[in-house]
Length: 537
Image 1: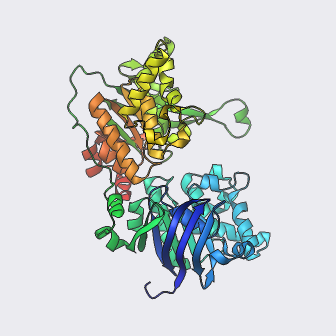
Image 2: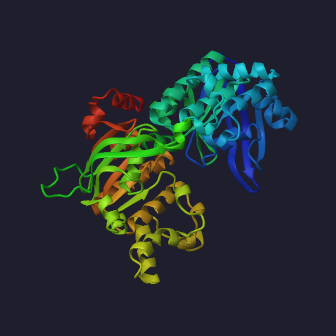
Image 3: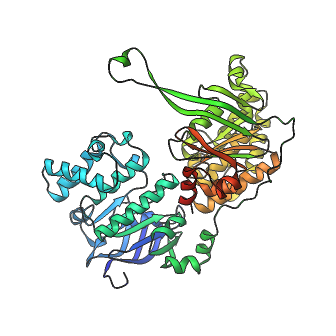
């Protein structure tokens, strides 16, 4: 690899928007067939740096040099760049559901690339599209080529994106967070796929990510970016073994740490905060043919689950997408009809709904969602968002009392107004805060009504590693101070290891293994559990 010629040589890359510079004189190179990881937190400039090479960042002012096989990409005309984009340099985007066109089948979108870039006939392009899908490991590629993006799973959509990127056999593949939206086992599969395809085609890969585990497993070299500056680069072995820059050291030290109250045997008369026996949740689905005119079919998402969550403890539910863990969370919140027994703080959900007591029960159980940006209303101020629960559950509070409670809730999650920001935080909107601050707002909104149980639905998967560590430390502190119980839904084994007392492993709607966190993660018995634990190693 060290003897391979340099494919891309970036010198003094600068990117700005108006008077605001976001990338400051970055220098790096990639050799033919090499895998380079560009690492940093959100806002570090890594994605802007990569996309600016092809001038794909709207309204960006780009300067410097980017030599690709002896031609400066930054000096090319728009017409010349069209011949490079997708042909010599291809991109796999972070979220395939938003990158793929929902109005066209996957095969149509791959065929379009083949016809435009390779000049194939429609019949030739059809056969080549199926062959490309097959090369990525998609089952039944001929049938999947006729599927729309929403008809594929997350892993299948990402494989289709990779097939489209490889359609014109590029020399360089830009992979922008290609596994962020995937489960831990699927992440490994996609990385292995990229590595296999990279070896087969001899292409170079520029991996843009904030996941250091992926870098260690995939890349040959790593370049670290902080606030638009390239602060360190070298081989993965050298940088991970002896990081020189303080920022790199901080990233490598940002693994979640366990700081929870040890699990104690509950008192004999202690009422479980959450208890389920034989829980079954199903959805109606259409039946094909004439029978569908008269009756609906049934898809069972959760089948015969038993749960028991003690006060002040965390029950982690782990599994891949489609395992039923999010359906389980919605049932615990009283948002889905169910069969079997399901109670919160000793009150059965079905009984509470029949007797009109569900509002009081909802005060005892609140939820923090995966993506705070989509779960917080963009039209409401911080004061309105955090105080909304008080309007429902404590309507007799005055405006002043409600505001005092909101300020106290924000302080509890580490958000204290900073006069230097030039105004009152209470009147600001969610888009004016960082990702970590928005998740703290979501936690404050849930805590303000003083619940007994928080449902945490992938609470840190959308956050950078450093922010993830901060949010988990906050949740651990709140649990110790308030004796809160958590139902933690996640596919991240490291988060389970840091937070959970008890673990439930779900696969295809069935609980396949349960027990203490030490027992399940250190001595897994079920083959599926062993796969999840090994994939996170």
